[in-house]
Length: 172
Image 1: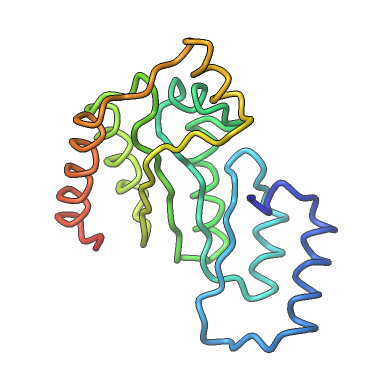
Image 2: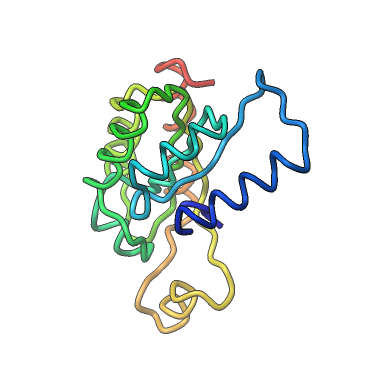
């Protein structure tokens, strides 16, 4: 899951417990994933105070229509706002997660999301092919015929484009 959905007091308990029970070297990359719909300046300040130096933003897409299909609680403005909050707090190691193979997604849509992500001047981008989890609303919509999965050729094109594009942009 994404820990940023928790209230600050619970996040602090978790971080205190980690530091109390484990020796965490100051020189490591200490990462937390955040959902753009649940992040606040207070949470970013807390993460930073406990030594978190890398934040991964679960963006998934830079198109509101695709975020809606995925059932996400955030929108594109939230993603951009989250990236700015993190940068302005002094954490420079930022990652963005994107999904390809979203129902109705086109190669051009995915290109748009990749370009939007790289324009944020972040350090890392992860791309994931959509997987349908059991018991989710998306699985129900798939079974009811409300959505259709993309064909393998379309998914392959997205992956190959992303590999080449991200390599050209310095993401390996």
